[in-house]
Length: 399
Ligand code: ATP
Image (cartoon, rainbow, N blue to C red; front, side, top):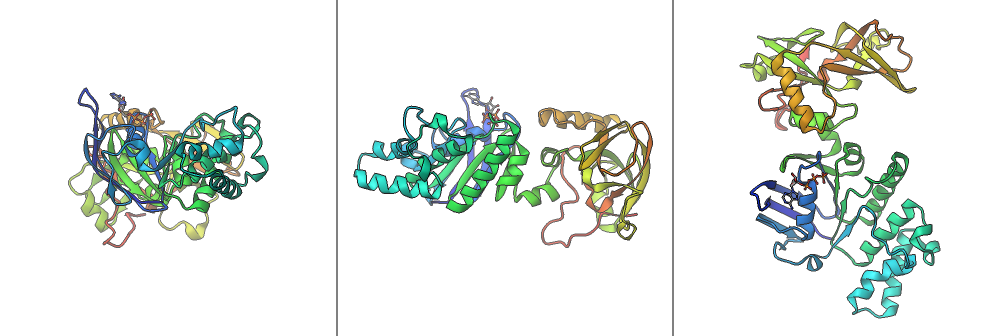
């Protein structure tokens, strides 16, 4: 096991295009790091640079403190676990796991046997050693693929979208399996995905990339609660964060549905901006009739016309359209294209309790937890509510 350090890594293809642009990222020994972002953001290229399948145009890559830029893939001691597991169908589970050891040629058959049996015990594959991959479940196949990585005593495991071909149910099961095994083995892991749910559920930390540039590296909770910019805010979370125009006038902030007063600290941060983009997650709205009166403090109350209701059993989503000024509408359209078409239409989606009686086509009385509101600068995407760690966290508005 080893740590991985990336220092200002750049990958420039022949046409001069920087698929990876000045990425610096430290992955600790034993850490589970996710590289996530929409299609084309450079996450696969970055993984391939780590494993040695792609040359590094600039910057340094260190594995276990050693600079490996010029080492061939086989000398980097990393184990890549591929999307289709790349198992040999004609070989038994035992032989599939033993395969990389037999290639190494410097181990006796007793030594190989000991390593295969130890790995299969860890992976609970002992009973399946004589079976062929075709007869195994998806989860068992995944474990065989990991077994092959384990016996090599690799310094790190690298996964490139291993679950993207599976149906939703199996994907959920495999996600749990990978998470359980990674924690059990405590091996440094780099995992590429475009799926923000996988990123949030699996990673110790998540690195979000956009067009080759690292946007934010943080724990899933930190990313969700304190996204550094509009892109991260829109990418992380499902349904996505709602974005609305926010007109600023002194310490007043006017959203499409409600006007509030900014705290002194936020008014200072918002000074000089007439128009910001407010971001509020769907779960930070509630049906006013169901809101706990003891917790209503700090919540903005408003009524709005409901366009569509989606009832999901445990909750329901109400879709509420609004008018956005052209500057905001254009920014949201740009964001939508950056996010691969994730919906950021000029409407909000609010998540309501399944018992709410709000009707499709009707008027709804809602409350919004304004303390959870983010404020973004349209031109740069910067999140003005991300308070530097040194400053105490405070509410943004009073209502
Ligand atoms: P996906 O999820 O679609 O695989 P990704 O985030 O993994 O996307 P990469 O495959 O790393 O993205 O590609 C990053 C960028 O580099 C893309 O814009 C892609 O077109 C470009 N790219 C990848 N390989 C090459 C190449 N061999 N020559 C030129 N450009 C390339």
